[in-house]
Length: 317
Image 1 (cartoon, one colour):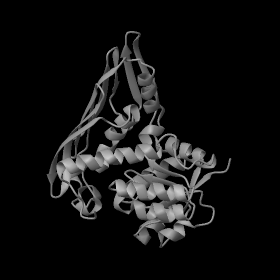
Image 2 (spheres, helix red, strand yellow):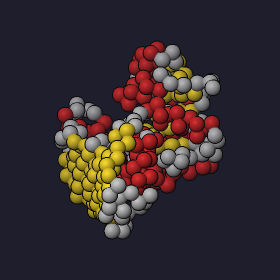
Image 3 (cartoon, one colour):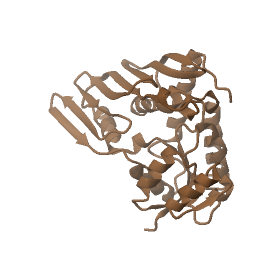
Protein backbone atom coordinates (compact mmCIF):
# COMPACT_ATOMS: atom_id res chain seq x y z
CA UNK A 1 0.00 0.00 0.00
CA UNK A 2 1.22 3.50 -0.84
CA UNK A 3 2.30 5.78 1.96
CA UNK A 4 -0.37 8.03 3.41
CA UNK A 5 0.50 11.65 2.57
CA UNK A 6 0.06 14.45 5.11
CA UNK A 7 -0.02 18.23 5.00
CA UNK A 8 1.34 19.64 8.26
CA UNK A 9 -0.09 22.92 9.54
CA UNK A 10 2.19 23.97 12.38
CA UNK A 11 5.78 23.00 13.14
CA UNK A 12 5.98 23.20 16.93
CA UNK A 13 6.98 20.56 19.46
CA UNK A 14 3.96 18.26 18.97
CA UNK A 15 4.44 18.42 15.19
CA UNK A 16 8.08 17.43 15.64
CA UNK A 17 7.13 14.48 17.84
CA UNK A 18 4.44 13.14 15.53
CA UNK A 19 6.49 13.62 12.36
CA UNK A 20 9.50 11.80 13.75
CA UNK A 21 7.33 8.83 14.69
CA UNK A 22 4.89 8.49 11.80
CA UNK A 23 7.57 8.72 9.11
CA UNK A 24 9.02 5.51 10.49
CA UNK A 25 5.79 3.85 9.37
CA UNK A 26 3.74 3.95 6.18
CA UNK A 27 3.29 7.74 6.22
CA UNK A 28 5.03 10.72 4.67
CA UNK A 29 4.75 14.49 4.90
CA UNK A 30 4.38 16.27 1.56
CA UNK A 31 3.61 19.86 2.54
CA UNK A 32 4.25 22.14 5.52
CA UNK A 33 3.00 25.52 6.68
CA UNK A 34 4.00 27.68 9.63
CA UNK A 35 3.48 31.37 10.37
CA UNK A 36 7.29 31.39 10.53
CA UNK A 37 8.29 30.51 6.97
CA UNK A 38 11.93 29.84 7.87
CA UNK A 39 10.76 27.35 10.46
CA UNK A 40 8.53 25.67 7.88
CA UNK A 41 11.45 25.38 5.47
CA UNK A 42 13.68 23.78 8.12
CA UNK A 43 10.92 21.34 9.09
CA UNK A 44 10.15 20.46 5.47
CA UNK A 45 13.80 19.75 4.71
CA UNK A 46 13.89 17.10 7.45
CA UNK A 47 11.06 15.16 5.84
CA UNK A 48 11.61 15.83 2.14
CA UNK A 49 8.45 17.95 2.00
CA UNK A 50 7.59 21.31 0.46
CA UNK A 51 7.23 24.44 2.62
CA UNK A 52 4.55 27.01 1.79
CA UNK A 53 3.93 30.60 2.81
CA UNK A 54 0.16 30.12 3.24
CA UNK A 55 -1.89 27.38 4.85
CA UNK A 56 -4.14 27.15 1.81
CA UNK A 57 -1.20 26.33 -0.44
CA UNK A 58 -0.07 23.55 1.89
CA UNK A 59 -3.62 22.15 2.12
CA UNK A 60 -4.10 22.20 -1.67
CA UNK A 61 -0.67 20.77 -2.41
CA UNK A 62 -0.83 17.94 -4.93
CA UNK A 63 -1.25 14.43 -3.52
CA UNK A 64 -2.22 15.47 0.04
CA UNK A 65 -4.39 12.71 1.53
CA UNK A 66 -5.16 14.51 4.80
CA UNK A 67 -4.25 17.56 6.88
CA UNK A 68 -2.75 17.45 10.37
CA UNK A 69 -3.26 20.63 12.39
CA UNK A 70 -0.80 21.24 15.24
CA UNK A 71 -1.12 24.96 15.92
CA UNK A 72 -2.33 26.76 19.08
CA UNK A 73 -5.98 25.83 19.62
CA UNK A 74 -7.22 29.37 19.02
CA UNK A 75 -6.40 28.84 15.31
CA UNK A 76 -7.83 25.34 14.94
CA UNK A 77 -11.22 26.49 13.63
CA UNK A 78 -9.69 28.60 10.85
CA UNK A 79 -7.39 25.88 9.54
CA UNK A 80 -9.87 23.02 10.00
CA UNK A 81 -12.59 24.79 8.05
CA UNK A 82 -10.12 25.78 5.32
CA UNK A 83 -9.22 22.13 4.83
CA UNK A 84 -12.76 20.74 5.11
CA UNK A 85 -14.17 23.23 2.59
CA UNK A 86 -11.56 21.90 0.17
CA UNK A 87 -12.66 18.34 0.98
CA UNK A 88 -9.40 17.48 2.70
CA UNK A 89 -9.75 15.12 5.71
CA UNK A 90 -8.48 16.57 8.98
CA UNK A 91 -6.77 15.27 12.10
CA UNK A 92 -6.66 18.24 14.49
CA UNK A 93 -4.84 18.43 17.79
CA UNK A 94 -6.90 18.71 20.94
CA UNK A 95 -8.82 20.72 21.86
CA UNK A 96 -10.22 21.51 18.43
CA UNK A 97 -11.48 24.87 19.67
CA UNK A 98 -11.98 26.85 22.85
CA UNK A 99 -15.74 26.42 23.33
CA UNK A 100 -18.80 24.58 22.05
CA UNK A 101 -19.43 27.21 19.35
CA UNK A 102 -16.01 26.43 17.84
CA UNK A 103 -16.64 22.70 17.97
CA UNK A 104 -20.04 23.01 16.30
CA UNK A 105 -18.62 25.14 13.48
CA UNK A 106 -16.06 22.47 12.65
CA UNK A 107 -18.38 19.48 12.98
CA UNK A 108 -21.09 21.16 10.92
CA UNK A 109 -18.53 21.98 8.23
CA UNK A 110 -17.33 18.36 8.16
CA UNK A 111 -20.91 17.11 7.78
CA UNK A 112 -21.81 19.69 5.11
CA UNK A 113 -18.74 18.80 3.06
CA UNK A 114 -18.97 15.06 3.82
CA UNK A 115 -15.31 15.11 4.79
CA UNK A 116 -13.55 13.27 7.61
CA UNK A 117 -12.63 15.12 10.77
CA UNK A 118 -11.12 13.80 14.00
CA UNK A 119 -9.78 15.29 17.21
CA UNK A 120 -6.26 14.00 17.84
CA UNK A 121 -6.89 12.37 21.21
CA UNK A 122 -4.18 9.71 20.95
CA UNK A 123 -5.19 8.03 24.23
CA UNK A 124 -8.25 6.45 22.64
CA UNK A 125 -6.43 5.01 19.65
CA UNK A 126 -4.41 2.91 22.10
CA UNK A 127 -5.25 -0.72 22.83
CA UNK A 128 -4.52 -0.04 26.51
CA UNK A 129 -7.43 2.41 26.88
CA UNK A 130 -9.65 0.18 24.73
CA UNK A 131 -8.82 -2.81 26.97
CA UNK A 132 -9.68 -0.83 30.12
CA UNK A 133 -13.02 0.07 28.55
CA UNK A 134 -13.66 -3.58 27.69
CA UNK A 135 -12.84 -4.68 31.26
CA UNK A 136 -15.36 -2.19 32.63
CA UNK A 137 -18.11 -2.90 30.11
CA UNK A 138 -17.76 -6.67 30.60
CA UNK A 139 -18.13 -6.31 34.38
CA UNK A 140 -14.63 -7.40 35.38
CA UNK A 141 -14.67 -5.04 38.38
CA UNK A 142 -18.43 -5.09 38.95
CA UNK A 143 -20.26 -1.78 39.26
CA UNK A 144 -17.88 1.17 39.13
CA UNK A 145 -17.94 3.19 42.34
CA UNK A 146 -15.00 5.59 42.18
CA UNK A 147 -12.46 6.91 39.69
CA UNK A 148 -9.49 8.96 40.83
CA UNK A 149 -7.20 10.65 38.33
CA UNK A 150 -4.23 12.91 38.99
CA UNK A 151 -2.66 14.67 36.04
CA UNK A 152 -0.25 17.55 36.30
CA UNK A 153 2.93 18.93 34.78
CA UNK A 154 5.02 21.99 35.71
CA UNK A 155 3.69 24.24 32.98
CA UNK A 156 4.31 27.35 35.06
CA UNK A 157 8.03 26.80 34.50
CA UNK A 158 7.64 27.34 30.76
CA UNK A 159 8.66 30.70 29.23
CA UNK A 160 6.13 33.46 29.89
CA UNK A 161 5.28 33.62 26.18
CA UNK A 162 4.37 29.91 26.04
CA UNK A 163 0.85 29.33 24.67
CA UNK A 164 0.07 27.33 27.84
CA UNK A 165 0.47 30.47 29.95
CA UNK A 166 -1.16 33.05 27.69
CA UNK A 167 -4.85 33.97 28.01
CA UNK A 168 -4.77 35.18 24.38
CA UNK A 169 -4.16 31.58 23.24
CA UNK A 170 -6.68 30.15 25.73
CA UNK A 171 -3.89 28.80 27.88
CA UNK A 172 -4.28 27.10 31.23
CA UNK A 173 -4.65 23.65 32.72
CA UNK A 174 -8.20 22.77 31.64
CA UNK A 175 -7.92 22.90 27.85
CA UNK A 176 -4.32 21.74 27.75
CA UNK A 177 -4.38 18.73 30.07
CA UNK A 178 -7.81 18.64 31.75
CA UNK A 179 -9.28 17.47 28.47
CA UNK A 180 -7.53 14.10 28.96
CA UNK A 181 -9.28 12.93 32.17
CA UNK A 182 -12.56 14.48 31.02
CA UNK A 183 -12.43 12.56 27.73
CA UNK A 184 -11.29 9.43 29.54
CA UNK A 185 -14.28 9.44 31.87
CA UNK A 186 -16.71 10.42 29.11
CA UNK A 187 -15.57 7.59 26.83
CA UNK A 188 -16.01 5.13 29.68
CA UNK A 189 -19.29 6.34 31.17
CA UNK A 190 -20.95 8.92 28.91
CA UNK A 191 -22.14 12.38 29.85
CA UNK A 192 -22.07 13.03 33.62
CA UNK A 193 -25.17 13.64 35.72
CA UNK A 194 -23.33 16.29 37.72
CA UNK A 195 -20.28 18.50 37.12
CA UNK A 196 -18.48 20.33 39.92
CA UNK A 197 -15.32 22.33 39.29
CA UNK A 198 -13.25 24.40 41.68
CA UNK A 199 -10.16 26.03 40.24
CA UNK A 200 -7.42 28.54 40.79
CA UNK A 201 -7.20 31.35 38.24
CA UNK A 202 -4.06 33.47 38.06
CA UNK A 203 -3.19 36.09 35.45
CA UNK A 204 -6.40 35.22 33.57
CA UNK A 205 -5.58 31.52 33.11
CA UNK A 206 -6.51 28.49 35.20
CA UNK A 207 -3.52 27.07 37.07
CA UNK A 208 -5.31 24.10 38.65
CA UNK A 209 -8.68 22.42 39.07
CA UNK A 210 -10.38 19.89 41.28
CA UNK A 211 -13.19 18.40 39.23
CA UNK A 212 -15.90 15.95 40.25
CA UNK A 213 -18.07 14.18 37.70
CA UNK A 214 -20.96 11.98 38.84
CA UNK A 215 -22.18 9.14 36.63
CA UNK A 216 -25.12 7.59 38.47
CA UNK A 217 -23.56 6.02 41.56
CA UNK A 218 -20.03 6.31 40.18
CA UNK A 219 -17.99 9.35 41.21
CA UNK A 220 -15.00 10.54 39.20
CA UNK A 221 -12.59 12.89 40.95
CA UNK A 222 -9.52 14.35 39.39
CA UNK A 223 -6.87 16.91 40.13
CA UNK A 224 -5.32 18.94 37.30
CA UNK A 225 -2.39 21.27 37.77
CA UNK A 226 0.35 23.23 36.02
CA UNK A 227 2.41 23.43 39.20
CA UNK A 228 3.72 19.88 39.72
CA UNK A 229 4.38 16.57 37.96
CA UNK A 230 2.11 13.61 38.61
CA UNK A 231 -0.02 11.15 36.65
CA UNK A 232 -2.03 8.14 37.79
CA UNK A 233 -5.49 6.63 37.54
CA UNK A 234 -7.39 4.18 39.76
CA UNK A 235 -10.84 2.85 38.92
CA UNK A 236 -12.58 1.02 41.77
CA UNK A 237 -15.59 -1.24 41.44
CA UNK A 238 -17.65 -3.54 43.66
CA UNK A 239 -15.61 -6.56 42.53
CA UNK A 240 -12.14 -5.19 41.86
CA UNK A 241 -10.07 -2.29 40.57
CA UNK A 242 -8.04 -1.13 37.59
CA UNK A 243 -4.87 0.90 37.97
CA UNK A 244 -2.76 2.79 35.45
CA UNK A 245 0.48 4.53 36.45
CA UNK A 246 0.00 6.64 33.32
CA UNK A 247 -3.41 6.93 31.74
CA UNK A 248 -3.24 9.43 28.86
CA UNK A 249 -0.16 7.72 27.35
CA UNK A 250 -0.53 4.33 28.97
CA UNK A 251 1.75 1.38 28.33
CA UNK A 252 0.23 -0.82 31.02
CA UNK A 253 -3.05 -1.39 32.86
CA UNK A 254 -3.50 -3.75 35.80
CA UNK A 255 -6.75 -5.48 36.71
CA UNK A 256 -7.31 -6.91 40.20
CA UNK A 257 -10.48 -8.92 40.77
CA UNK A 258 -11.78 -12.11 42.34
CA UNK A 259 -10.24 -13.95 39.39
CA UNK A 260 -6.78 -12.71 40.39
CA UNK A 261 -4.37 -10.15 38.98
CA UNK A 262 -4.06 -9.49 35.26
CA UNK A 263 -1.90 -6.98 33.39
CA UNK A 264 -2.26 -5.70 29.85
CA UNK A 265 0.77 -4.15 28.18
CA UNK A 266 0.63 -2.06 25.04
CA UNK A 267 1.55 1.39 23.91
CA UNK A 268 0.07 4.77 23.25
CA UNK A 269 1.84 6.23 20.25
CA UNK A 270 1.37 8.62 17.37
CA UNK A 271 2.05 6.02 14.70
CA UNK A 272 -0.93 3.93 15.83
CA UNK A 273 -3.14 7.03 15.99
CA UNK A 274 -2.19 8.27 12.51
CA UNK A 275 -2.41 4.78 11.00
CA UNK A 276 -5.90 4.16 12.37
CA UNK A 277 -7.03 7.58 11.19
CA UNK A 278 -5.61 6.86 7.72
CA UNK A 279 -7.51 3.56 7.66
CA UNK A 280 -10.76 5.33 8.52
CA UNK A 281 -10.20 7.97 5.84
CA UNK A 282 -9.45 5.31 3.22
CA UNK A 283 -12.63 3.51 4.28
CA UNK A 284 -14.65 6.64 3.47
CA UNK A 285 -15.69 7.55 6.99
CA UNK A 286 -16.66 11.11 7.92
CA UNK A 287 -15.99 10.72 11.64
CA UNK A 288 -13.84 8.43 13.75
CA UNK A 289 -15.05 5.35 15.59
CA UNK A 290 -12.39 6.07 18.23
CA UNK A 291 -13.23 9.74 18.84
CA UNK A 292 -16.64 10.39 17.28
CA UNK A 293 -18.13 13.86 16.98
CA UNK A 294 -20.33 13.22 20.04
CA UNK A 295 -17.25 12.65 22.21
CA UNK A 296 -15.52 15.84 21.07
CA UNK A 297 -18.70 17.88 21.43
CA UNK A 298 -19.79 16.60 24.84
CA UNK A 299 -16.32 16.88 26.35
CA UNK A 300 -16.20 20.52 25.28
CA UNK A 301 -19.63 21.06 26.87
CA UNK A 302 -18.20 19.70 30.14
CA UNK A 303 -15.19 22.02 29.92
CA UNK A 304 -17.42 25.00 29.12
CA UNK A 305 -19.42 24.26 32.27
CA UNK A 306 -16.23 23.97 34.31
CA UNK A 307 -15.10 27.38 33.06
CA UNK A 308 -18.44 28.96 33.90
CA UNK A 309 -18.10 27.67 37.45
CA UNK A 310 -14.66 29.31 37.65
CA UNK A 311 -15.94 32.47 35.94
CA UNK A 312 -13.16 32.02 33.38
CA UNK A 313 -13.53 33.59 29.94
CA UNK A 314 -10.84 33.89 27.27
CA UNK A 315 -10.06 37.28 25.66
CA UNK A 316 -10.82 35.88 22.19
CA UNK A 317 -14.39 34.87 23.10
